[in-house]
Length: 98
Image: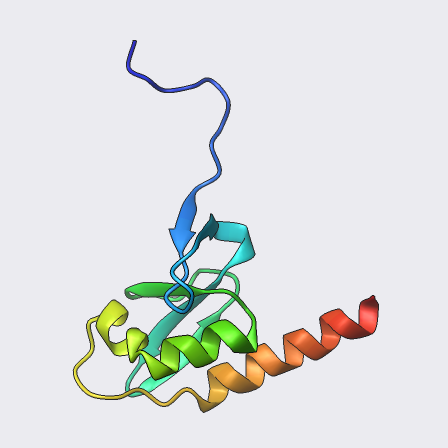
């Protein structure tokens, strides 16, 4: 036996903020375009991606640890304003639906 199961396993990724593993569907993919971190909710933008929970706490941890440039293999700091705006909007939208 190869050790594989017949059931489809959900791919897991590690959040660069809190360093916890979660299913790919629970995390938000981030890509670097020029010097900016851009959210990629559909997961279709080209380039190397990093994953983070779509929560302000994980985003703050990732920025504080300078995890985005390291994970995306980009020299220098990255602008996270667009990413922060996206996370705040999705957080507000989730709270409104509850």
